[in-house]
Image (cartoon, rainbow, N blue to C red; front, side):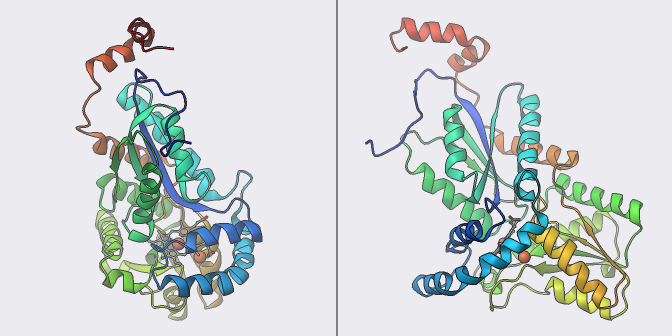
Length: 368
Ligand SMILES: C=CC1=C(C)c2cc3[nH]c(cc4nc(cc5[nH]c(cc1n2)c(C)c5CCC(=O)O)C(CCC(=O)O)=C4C)c(C)c3C=C
Ligand SMILES: [Fe+2]
Ligand SMILES: [Fe+2]
Protein backbone atom coordinates (compact mmCIF):
# COMPACT_ATOMS: atom_id res chain seq x y z
CA UNK A 1 0.00 0.00 0.00
CA UNK A 2 1.41 3.47 -0.86
CA UNK A 3 2.43 5.64 2.10
CA UNK A 4 0.41 8.62 0.88
CA UNK A 5 -3.16 8.65 -0.42
CA UNK A 6 -4.33 10.17 -3.70
CA UNK A 7 -7.47 10.98 -5.61
CA UNK A 8 -8.97 7.87 -7.14
CA UNK A 9 -8.47 7.77 -10.90
CA UNK A 10 -6.24 10.88 -10.79
CA UNK A 11 -5.41 12.37 -14.18
CA UNK A 12 -3.00 15.23 -14.46
CA UNK A 13 -5.09 17.06 -17.03
CA UNK A 14 -8.14 17.17 -14.74
CA UNK A 15 -9.60 20.64 -14.44
CA UNK A 16 -8.75 21.89 -10.94
CA UNK A 17 -11.62 23.14 -8.86
CA UNK A 18 -12.01 25.42 -5.94
CA UNK A 19 -13.15 23.67 -2.77
CA UNK A 20 -14.57 25.15 0.41
CA UNK A 21 -14.68 23.13 3.61
CA UNK A 22 -17.35 24.60 5.88
CA UNK A 23 -16.88 23.25 9.40
CA UNK A 24 -18.53 23.30 12.78
CA UNK A 25 -17.95 21.61 16.09
CA UNK A 26 -19.89 18.40 15.63
CA UNK A 27 -22.56 16.41 17.18
CA UNK A 28 -23.30 12.79 18.13
CA UNK A 29 -24.75 10.41 15.50
CA UNK A 30 -27.81 9.77 17.66
CA UNK A 31 -29.18 11.01 20.99
CA UNK A 32 -28.26 7.75 22.73
CA UNK A 33 -25.82 6.89 25.49
CA UNK A 34 -23.44 4.81 23.29
CA UNK A 35 -23.36 7.48 20.55
CA UNK A 36 -22.70 10.16 23.16
CA UNK A 37 -19.91 8.07 24.68
CA UNK A 38 -18.17 7.85 21.28
CA UNK A 39 -18.68 11.53 20.56
CA UNK A 40 -17.58 12.78 23.98
CA UNK A 41 -14.54 10.47 23.98
CA UNK A 42 -13.36 12.12 20.75
CA UNK A 43 -14.31 15.66 21.81
CA UNK A 44 -13.05 15.60 25.38
CA UNK A 45 -9.98 13.58 24.38
CA UNK A 46 -8.79 16.52 22.26
CA UNK A 47 -5.91 18.26 24.12
CA UNK A 48 -6.97 21.59 22.57
CA UNK A 49 -10.26 21.29 24.45
CA UNK A 50 -9.06 19.87 27.75
CA UNK A 51 -5.51 21.04 28.23
CA UNK A 52 -4.26 19.16 31.26
CA UNK A 53 -1.79 16.39 32.01
CA UNK A 54 -2.66 13.67 29.49
CA UNK A 55 -2.34 10.43 31.57
CA UNK A 56 -4.25 12.02 34.45
CA UNK A 57 -7.01 13.27 32.14
CA UNK A 58 -7.22 9.92 30.35
CA UNK A 59 -7.88 8.17 33.68
CA UNK A 60 -10.48 10.73 34.71
CA UNK A 61 -12.19 10.78 31.30
CA UNK A 62 -12.41 7.03 30.81
CA UNK A 63 -12.70 6.10 34.49
CA UNK A 64 -15.34 8.63 35.57
CA UNK A 65 -16.69 11.11 32.98
CA UNK A 66 -17.50 8.69 30.15
CA UNK A 67 -19.32 6.43 32.62
CA UNK A 68 -21.71 9.16 33.76
CA UNK A 69 -21.98 12.11 31.37
CA UNK A 70 -23.11 10.31 28.16
CA UNK A 71 -26.45 9.30 29.70
CA UNK A 72 -27.15 12.81 30.93
CA UNK A 73 -26.05 14.42 27.65
CA UNK A 74 -28.11 11.95 25.58
CA UNK A 75 -31.24 12.99 27.49
CA UNK A 76 -30.44 16.66 26.78
CA UNK A 77 -29.86 15.96 23.07
CA UNK A 78 -33.20 14.13 22.86
CA UNK A 79 -34.92 17.40 23.80
CA UNK A 80 -33.58 19.20 20.73
CA UNK A 81 -33.24 16.33 18.24
CA UNK A 82 -35.06 16.85 14.95
CA UNK A 83 -36.22 14.51 12.21
CA UNK A 84 -33.08 15.12 10.16
CA UNK A 85 -30.76 14.77 13.18
CA UNK A 86 -29.16 17.27 15.50
CA UNK A 87 -29.97 20.95 14.79
CA UNK A 88 -26.29 21.78 14.36
CA UNK A 89 -26.11 19.26 11.52
CA UNK A 90 -29.41 20.04 9.80
CA UNK A 91 -28.72 23.78 9.91
CA UNK A 92 -25.09 23.18 8.84
CA UNK A 93 -26.28 21.40 5.69
CA UNK A 94 -28.48 24.35 4.75
CA UNK A 95 -25.64 26.76 5.45
CA UNK A 96 -23.16 24.85 3.26
CA UNK A 97 -25.65 24.64 0.40
CA UNK A 98 -26.51 28.34 0.70
CA UNK A 99 -22.83 29.28 0.62
CA UNK A 100 -22.26 27.05 -2.43
CA UNK A 101 -25.10 28.63 -4.40
CA UNK A 102 -23.89 32.13 -3.62
CA UNK A 103 -20.26 31.37 -4.49
CA UNK A 104 -21.21 29.77 -7.79
CA UNK A 105 -23.07 32.94 -8.73
CA UNK A 106 -20.22 35.19 -7.68
CA UNK A 107 -17.53 33.09 -9.36
CA UNK A 108 -19.68 32.24 -12.35
CA UNK A 109 -18.75 28.56 -12.25
CA UNK A 110 -18.85 25.36 -10.19
CA UNK A 111 -17.42 25.34 -6.67
CA UNK A 112 -17.30 22.32 -4.38
CA UNK A 113 -18.54 23.00 -0.87
CA UNK A 114 -18.56 20.30 1.81
CA UNK A 115 -19.80 20.46 5.39
CA UNK A 116 -17.55 18.77 7.93
CA UNK A 117 -17.59 18.40 11.68
CA UNK A 118 -14.55 18.52 13.95
CA UNK A 119 -15.96 15.66 16.04
CA UNK A 120 -18.31 12.97 14.77
CA UNK A 121 -19.78 12.96 11.27
CA UNK A 122 -19.44 14.04 8.51
CA UNK A 123 -15.76 14.13 9.51
CA UNK A 124 -13.11 16.55 8.35
CA UNK A 125 -11.26 13.60 6.81
CA UNK A 126 -14.30 12.63 4.72
CA UNK A 127 -15.04 16.24 3.77
CA UNK A 128 -11.50 16.83 2.51
CA UNK A 129 -11.54 13.53 0.62
CA UNK A 130 -14.82 14.43 -1.06
CA UNK A 131 -13.36 17.76 -2.13
CA UNK A 132 -10.34 15.90 -3.53
CA UNK A 133 -12.59 13.50 -5.47
CA UNK A 134 -14.43 16.49 -6.91
CA UNK A 135 -11.08 17.78 -8.15
CA UNK A 136 -10.43 20.57 -5.65
CA UNK A 137 -6.78 21.57 -5.76
CA UNK A 138 -7.32 24.79 -3.82
CA UNK A 139 -9.17 24.54 -0.55
CA UNK A 140 -10.52 27.29 1.67
CA UNK A 141 -11.39 26.21 5.22
CA UNK A 142 -14.27 28.18 6.74
CA UNK A 143 -14.91 27.25 10.38
CA UNK A 144 -18.28 28.63 11.41
CA UNK A 145 -16.94 30.22 14.60
CA UNK A 146 -17.05 34.01 14.50
CA UNK A 147 -14.49 34.29 17.33
CA UNK A 148 -11.15 32.45 17.23
CA UNK A 149 -10.31 30.06 20.04
CA UNK A 150 -7.60 27.42 20.04
CA UNK A 151 -10.26 25.07 21.46
CA UNK A 152 -12.42 25.38 18.34
CA UNK A 153 -10.73 26.97 15.30
CA UNK A 154 -7.24 25.83 16.35
CA UNK A 155 -8.46 22.30 16.81
CA UNK A 156 -10.19 22.38 13.41
CA UNK A 157 -6.88 23.30 11.79
CA UNK A 158 -5.20 20.40 13.64
CA UNK A 159 -7.71 17.99 12.08
CA UNK A 160 -7.19 19.48 8.59
CA UNK A 161 -3.40 19.24 8.87
CA UNK A 162 -3.55 15.72 10.32
CA UNK A 163 -5.47 14.58 7.26
CA UNK A 164 -3.51 16.50 4.63
CA UNK A 165 -0.16 15.25 5.86
CA UNK A 166 -1.25 11.80 4.68
CA UNK A 167 -1.88 12.99 1.10
CA UNK A 168 0.44 12.74 -1.88
CA UNK A 169 -0.85 15.88 -3.61
CA UNK A 170 -1.44 18.51 -0.93
CA UNK A 171 -3.87 21.18 -2.10
CA UNK A 172 -3.17 24.88 -1.77
CA UNK A 173 -4.78 25.84 1.49
CA UNK A 174 -6.34 28.93 3.03
CA UNK A 175 -7.83 29.18 6.51
CA UNK A 176 -10.33 31.65 7.89
CA UNK A 177 -9.50 32.35 11.54
CA UNK A 178 -12.32 34.61 12.74
CA UNK A 179 -14.86 37.20 11.69
CA UNK A 180 -15.73 38.66 15.09
CA UNK A 181 -15.82 42.25 13.78
CA UNK A 182 -16.91 41.66 10.18
CA UNK A 183 -19.34 44.54 9.44
CA UNK A 184 -21.85 42.27 7.70
CA UNK A 185 -21.81 39.80 10.59
CA UNK A 186 -22.41 42.66 13.03
CA UNK A 187 -25.18 43.95 10.76
CA UNK A 188 -26.85 40.51 10.56
CA UNK A 189 -26.83 40.25 14.37
CA UNK A 190 -28.25 43.77 14.65
CA UNK A 191 -30.96 42.89 12.09
CA UNK A 192 -32.11 39.82 13.96
CA UNK A 193 -32.22 41.70 17.27
CA UNK A 194 -34.18 44.57 15.69
CA UNK A 195 -36.67 42.08 14.22
CA UNK A 196 -37.06 40.44 17.63
CA UNK A 197 -37.73 43.82 19.25
CA UNK A 198 -40.26 44.71 16.54
CA UNK A 199 -42.13 41.45 17.19
CA UNK A 200 -41.88 41.28 21.00
CA UNK A 201 -40.78 44.70 22.27
CA UNK A 202 -37.42 45.38 23.92
CA UNK A 203 -36.66 43.65 27.23
CA UNK A 204 -35.02 45.43 30.15
CA UNK A 205 -31.65 44.00 29.17
CA UNK A 206 -29.97 42.10 26.34
CA UNK A 207 -27.46 39.41 27.30
CA UNK A 208 -24.83 38.39 24.79
CA UNK A 209 -24.14 34.87 26.04
CA UNK A 210 -21.01 33.25 24.56
CA UNK A 211 -19.74 29.71 25.08
CA UNK A 212 -17.19 29.76 27.90
CA UNK A 213 -13.78 28.17 28.36
CA UNK A 214 -11.37 27.89 31.30
CA UNK A 215 -10.06 31.35 32.29
CA UNK A 216 -6.57 29.80 32.29
CA UNK A 217 -6.71 29.57 28.47
CA UNK A 218 -7.24 33.34 28.23
CA UNK A 219 -4.36 33.95 30.65
CA UNK A 220 -2.21 31.69 28.45
CA UNK A 221 -2.93 33.73 25.33
CA UNK A 222 -6.26 32.61 23.84
CA UNK A 223 -7.94 35.95 23.17
CA UNK A 224 -11.38 34.51 22.38
CA UNK A 225 -12.75 36.45 25.35
CA UNK A 226 -11.66 39.78 23.83
CA UNK A 227 -13.21 38.95 20.46
CA UNK A 228 -16.51 38.13 22.19
CA UNK A 229 -16.42 41.52 23.92
CA UNK A 230 -15.71 43.23 20.62
CA UNK A 231 -18.58 41.52 18.78
CA UNK A 232 -21.03 42.49 21.51
CA UNK A 233 -19.79 46.08 21.71
CA UNK A 234 -20.05 46.57 17.95
CA UNK A 235 -23.60 45.18 17.84
CA UNK A 236 -24.64 47.36 20.79
CA UNK A 237 -23.13 50.41 19.07
CA UNK A 238 -24.92 49.54 15.84
CA UNK A 239 -28.19 49.39 17.78
CA UNK A 240 -27.32 52.60 19.68
CA UNK A 241 -27.89 50.86 22.99
CA UNK A 242 -27.10 52.51 26.33
CA UNK A 243 -24.20 50.88 28.20
CA UNK A 244 -26.45 49.44 30.89
CA UNK A 245 -28.90 47.93 28.36
CA UNK A 246 -26.61 45.05 27.42
CA UNK A 247 -24.07 42.70 29.00
CA UNK A 248 -21.66 39.91 28.01
CA UNK A 249 -21.82 36.57 29.84
CA UNK A 250 -20.33 33.08 29.34
CA UNK A 251 -22.25 29.80 29.41
CA UNK A 252 -21.80 26.00 29.25
CA UNK A 253 -19.40 25.47 32.15
CA UNK A 254 -17.71 22.09 32.31
CA UNK A 255 -15.66 20.75 35.22
CA UNK A 256 -14.49 22.47 38.37
CA UNK A 257 -12.05 25.03 37.03
CA UNK A 258 -12.82 28.76 36.93
CA UNK A 259 -14.16 29.64 33.46
CA UNK A 260 -14.63 33.00 31.75
CA UNK A 261 -16.96 35.16 33.82
CA UNK A 262 -19.61 36.35 34.49
CA UNK A 263 -21.49 33.09 34.09
CA UNK A 264 -24.76 33.23 32.14
CA UNK A 265 -26.85 31.14 34.58
CA UNK A 266 -25.74 33.11 37.66
CA UNK A 267 -26.39 36.40 35.86
CA UNK A 268 -29.84 35.30 34.70
CA UNK A 269 -30.70 34.29 38.28
CA UNK A 270 -29.36 37.54 39.75
CA UNK A 271 -31.40 39.65 37.29
CA UNK A 272 -34.58 37.73 38.10
CA UNK A 273 -33.96 38.09 41.84
CA UNK A 274 -33.38 41.81 41.47
CA UNK A 275 -36.88 42.22 39.98
CA UNK A 276 -36.20 42.14 36.24
CA UNK A 277 -39.23 40.87 34.34
CA UNK A 278 -38.09 40.52 30.73
CA UNK A 279 -34.67 39.49 29.53
CA UNK A 280 -33.48 39.04 25.94
CA UNK A 281 -30.60 36.61 25.27
CA UNK A 282 -28.65 36.17 22.07
CA UNK A 283 -25.84 33.62 21.61
CA UNK A 284 -23.86 35.63 19.08
CA UNK A 285 -20.90 33.24 19.01
CA UNK A 286 -23.00 30.31 17.76
CA UNK A 287 -23.52 30.43 14.01
CA UNK A 288 -26.14 27.69 14.30
CA UNK A 289 -28.56 26.71 17.01
CA UNK A 290 -27.55 23.60 18.92
CA UNK A 291 -27.75 21.90 22.27
CA UNK A 292 -26.00 24.80 23.99
CA UNK A 293 -28.47 27.40 22.78
CA UNK A 294 -31.76 25.50 22.57
CA UNK A 295 -31.54 23.25 25.58
CA UNK A 296 -29.29 25.34 27.80
CA UNK A 297 -30.48 28.90 27.10
CA UNK A 298 -34.00 28.60 25.69
CA UNK A 299 -34.71 25.70 28.06
CA UNK A 300 -32.67 25.70 31.29
CA UNK A 301 -31.88 29.39 31.63
CA UNK A 302 -35.44 30.43 30.82
CA UNK A 303 -36.54 28.16 33.68
CA UNK A 304 -33.95 29.67 36.03
CA UNK A 305 -35.26 33.15 35.16
CA UNK A 306 -38.87 32.24 35.75
CA UNK A 307 -38.23 30.25 38.94
CA UNK A 308 -36.51 33.28 40.46
CA UNK A 309 -39.20 35.85 39.79
CA UNK A 310 -38.69 36.81 36.13
CA UNK A 311 -41.56 36.70 33.63
CA UNK A 312 -39.90 35.70 30.40
CA UNK A 313 -36.45 35.08 29.05
CA UNK A 314 -36.70 35.51 25.28
CA UNK A 315 -34.03 33.63 23.40
CA UNK A 316 -33.14 35.20 20.03
CA UNK A 317 -32.29 32.43 17.56
CA UNK A 318 -28.83 32.08 16.01
CA UNK A 319 -28.25 33.47 12.52
CA UNK A 320 -28.62 29.92 11.12
CA UNK A 321 -29.65 30.04 7.42
CA UNK A 322 -30.90 33.62 7.33
CA UNK A 323 -30.14 35.25 4.00
CA UNK A 324 -28.09 38.06 5.54
CA UNK A 325 -25.98 35.43 7.34
CA UNK A 326 -25.34 33.30 4.25
CA UNK A 327 -24.65 36.41 2.15
CA UNK A 328 -22.14 37.51 4.77
CA UNK A 329 -20.43 34.10 4.87
CA UNK A 330 -20.20 33.92 1.07
CA UNK A 331 -18.72 37.44 1.00
CA UNK A 332 -16.26 36.44 3.71
CA UNK A 333 -15.20 33.45 1.60
CA UNK A 334 -14.83 35.73 -1.44
CA UNK A 335 -12.57 38.09 0.57
CA UNK A 336 -10.31 35.17 1.45
CA UNK A 337 -10.21 33.92 -2.13
CA UNK A 338 -8.80 37.24 -3.35
CA UNK A 339 -5.50 37.06 -5.14
CA UNK A 340 -5.56 33.32 -5.53
CA UNK A 341 -4.08 33.23 -9.00
CA UNK A 342 -6.44 32.61 -11.84
CA UNK A 343 -6.09 29.18 -13.37
CA UNK A 344 -3.45 28.67 -16.07
CA UNK A 345 -4.40 29.55 -19.67
CA UNK A 346 -4.77 25.84 -20.37
CA UNK A 347 -7.19 25.41 -17.50
CA UNK A 348 -9.13 28.53 -18.46
CA UNK A 349 -9.51 27.15 -21.96
CA UNK A 350 -10.56 23.75 -20.63
CA UNK A 351 -13.16 25.35 -18.37
CA UNK A 352 -14.72 26.78 -21.46
CA UNK A 353 -14.33 23.59 -23.48
CA UNK A 354 -13.61 20.47 -21.38
CA UNK A 355 -14.06 18.10 -24.33
CA UNK A 356 -11.33 19.81 -26.36
CA UNK A 357 -8.92 19.56 -23.42
CA UNK A 358 -9.63 15.87 -23.01
CA UNK A 359 -9.09 15.31 -26.71
CA UNK A 360 -5.79 17.24 -26.57
CA UNK A 361 -4.63 15.24 -23.57
CA UNK A 362 -5.45 12.00 -25.39
CA UNK A 363 -3.61 13.17 -28.48
CA UNK A 364 -0.58 13.89 -26.27
CA UNK A 365 -0.73 10.32 -24.99
CA UNK A 366 -1.59 11.18 -21.40
CA UNK A 367 -5.22 10.13 -21.57
CA UNK A 368 -6.71 6.78 -20.76
C1 LIG B 1 -14.67 20.64 28.15
C2 LIG B 1 -14.46 21.79 27.73
C3 LIG B 1 -15.11 22.52 26.64
C4 LIG B 1 -14.58 23.64 26.02
C5 LIG B 1 -13.26 24.31 26.33
C6 LIG B 1 -15.51 24.04 25.02
C7 LIG B 1 -15.32 25.15 24.18
C8 LIG B 1 -16.22 25.55 23.20
N1 LIG B 1 -17.31 24.84 22.70
C9 LIG B 1 -17.95 25.60 21.74
C10 LIG B 1 -19.10 25.26 21.01
C11 LIG B 1 -19.94 24.16 21.29
N2 LIG B 1 -19.82 23.27 22.33
C12 LIG B 1 -20.84 22.36 22.27
C13 LIG B 1 -21.04 21.29 23.12
C14 LIG B 1 -20.20 20.91 24.17
N3 LIG B 1 -19.10 21.61 24.66
C15 LIG B 1 -18.48 20.88 25.66
C16 LIG B 1 -17.29 21.21 26.35
C17 LIG B 1 -16.40 22.25 26.01
N4 LIG B 1 -16.56 23.18 25.04
C18 LIG B 1 -19.23 19.66 25.83
C19 LIG B 1 -18.90 18.55 26.80
C20 LIG B 1 -20.28 19.68 24.90
C21 LIG B 1 -21.26 18.53 24.60
C22 LIG B 1 -22.54 18.63 25.20
C23 LIG B 1 -22.58 18.19 26.61
O1 LIG B 1 -22.32 17.01 26.89
O2 LIG B 1 -22.89 19.04 27.45
C24 LIG B 1 -21.67 22.67 21.14
C25 LIG B 1 -22.97 21.99 20.75
C26 LIG B 1 -22.84 20.74 19.92
C27 LIG B 1 -24.19 20.19 19.49
O3 LIG B 1 -24.20 19.07 19.00
O4 LIG B 1 -25.25 20.78 19.62
C28 LIG B 1 -21.10 23.79 20.52
C29 LIG B 1 -21.57 24.47 19.28
C30 LIG B 1 -17.21 26.82 21.60
C31 LIG B 1 -17.57 27.95 20.65
C32 LIG B 1 -16.14 26.78 22.50
C33 LIG B 1 -15.06 27.75 22.82
C34 LIG B 1 -14.96 28.92 22.45
FE1 LIG C 1 -18.38 23.41 23.93
FE1 LIG D 1 -24.39 22.85 27.82
